Length: 62
Image (cartoon, rainbow, N blue to C red; front, side):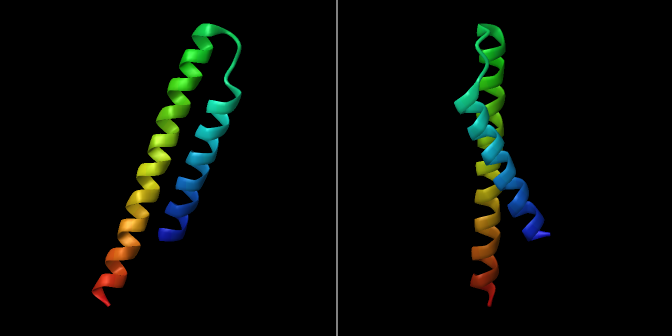
């Protein structure tokens, strides 16, 4: 479960980062793609942060 969550977080981060870099030329689409990319990047960071917290908590319990 934790391994899957880790890969989901990595994929979200990568997709968001790629979206932030590429972005379309059309202003409206560009705004939408930047917003979506920022959201995905944030979601990936949140998932990754949650994963790190879970790992640290599991080590703390040992």
